[in-house]
Amino acid sequence: MGATTIGALIGGAVDAMSGDDGVADGVLYGAITANVLKLVLPVALTYAVGWGVLKGLSVLVDTVSRKVSA
Image (cartoon, rainbow, N blue to C red; front, side):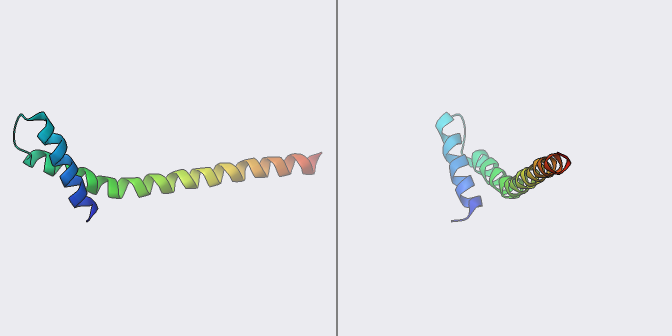
């Protein structure tokens, strides 16, 4: 199953637990949320890895420059 289908099923199930109305709006919210997360999570993960690499390089350069100057 695709992420959109799983998101729709989870959204529908969560909305059905309230019992106030139909599950259609929960299905839509779940499907939309799944599609947004398919875009946002890889971007956030890529940003976090890039930041970590830059931070590590900064520490490495700082350490090397201290040892060279000492």
